[in-house]
Length: 406
Image (cartoon, rainbow, N blue to C red):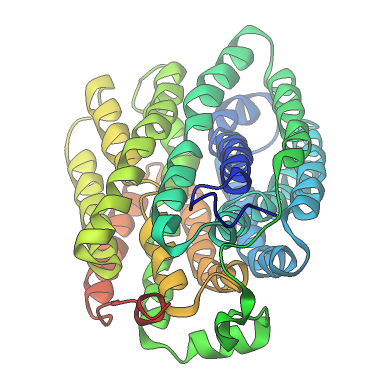
């Protein structure tokens, strides 16, 4: 247990933040690098672009459906057992993907990796940090976690592309499986402890059903959940299809890897900025601004000729806005309902995100198969993002009354 006189940044919080950041960084880096394997798999197996896109769609849907359950398990039993199970699922999923068969891609790259990411991503890890952090430092801790969690992509994507070029895509997937296994060992750094006693308010008790019922009756929560669909739709389309898109436009595969890596490093900065702005402008306004800026970046990139320079500039802009939604979404949930049931409520909201991700990955592949280009997909991203920004602005201002009373 942390020393109550040690201040808000207790040893338990710091160690758990290091562990959570490392796990999130590995998990997101592994998942966001999978788009690099589309081209070699299409070239070397009977898998098509649409097949690969549908497998990634299954992955994101499995992630979304599994997230409330993984979050609820974390709320009740702690994050260590959840991450260990998810790490094993990650290894199995990458192994099956490396077989190069349709069933291996659907079951491994789709279902198993989707469930694995549900147990090693924000819904679980932000919940762990939220329960250890006092309200005074909670927003800062979450922003740091989300920022650090993007650094794995900066390293893993170019390393994976180097392994594909130097050896084979199967060997590269084997290396990623070893990284996935290491997440289980990192859980040894997790510490128990609570920033405040659970008796501060009845709403702080772990009760998934009651928390979900309360959240679904809250207008701001419902609107944010619906708008969150656009986030998944846009980001997973880009993560899945951008490497193949720039290849079709005549750029070398290394540009796709560089773009994914640049998304990772720029996201670290953007997430910290978003956390700062949330404290000044409010979560609702920051979320709407993120959706608007993302959509504008997509529209400009689609309108301009594709080159190395425009691709990397687009990646930098999208990276700045990539996971910057995590501080405002987390702040909204913690502010309205407290941290006790965070994993469950984030999972419910995130399901909408992953339904969007499913459609973004799948329809991206279908649009290419039907028309021979990604134009339909890019136009869809602009329309959906614009609607999400307008919808988010209709939500009530989030004054976070529950936290102010503590």
